[in-house]
Length: 357
Ligand code: BGC
Image 1 (cartoon, helix red, strand yellow):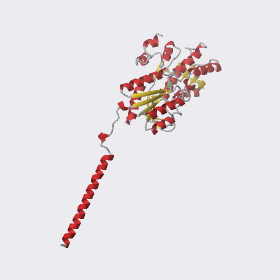
Image 2 (cartoon, rainbow, N blue to C red):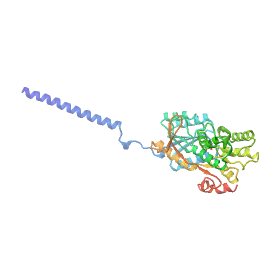
Image 3 (spheres, rainbow, N blue to C red):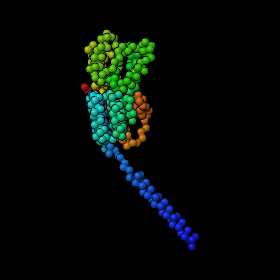
Image 4 (cartoon, rainbow, N blue to C red):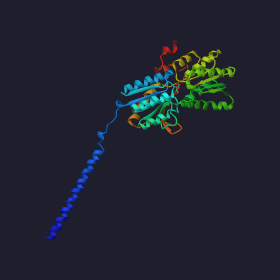
């Protein structure tokens, strides 16, 4: 009888243990279901839920109107909302406008910095809010930029100087750089001087004037060109300018000395006025950068960044802090021989506007 009681007591104990284990297992399973929702329950964002903040420096040059309008057109076709701000070359305003967009809620920031260094603070601010940053056309320096999309600016300089040295292998060169605060201007200058270096070392080319153009302002470039002409008693054989607006200003200065058309000038952007000057023979070269291609890629990549999708970069560019994943499109040199098959074929300009002015 005593043995029977012992077996009964142990059996009850075992049953209680099994019940407890089963209960614990069940409740753990319940908790797991609560904490990790089934994958199909996770909300998937689609492009239609995305809002892009597009912070632009300026609309001073023709090209930036195209950048803005084509960006908006591509985004609209993808069903993506965009808020555009333009800072008119004012750093404080650009920072303030961008901070406002971040705090009001955007999913990704696309930025064309006026000042490459000042916008670093905004990259940090965006990251704190979980927003990725695409540096558009111009690189933000010293910040953990997520992606840089531009034309190859060093290549712009290389192509300008290569064409120029073919036209003018010996002589006095004037270099009218872009804005010191724009890193593109530095990359272009690197490209130009890479090509000029051996000519300079041989003593064939002398760079008699080399200045930045504050904020890319054409009047500043014109004054610089006037100084270059005066100081060198007009003994100048070639002019390389940062863009078409500054090239146009340099040509105005040359006109005052009746030298427009006899001294080769290079610019970039394929602005309508620049292409018209090429037709007229006062400017020799520009660099065409299809804004259509750039803005379409930008919208596509901004959406990917917002959705957290992988992006295959071409290379990296060091911005002083990190090697920024970068996608760089190739610029195309345009002179009198290929206007029709480049800017006109692409619809960048109309034949009538280029030739019948
Ligand atoms: C751009 C040029 C433009 C210049 C002035 C540069 O960063 O690459 O295309 O002409 O800024 O706005």
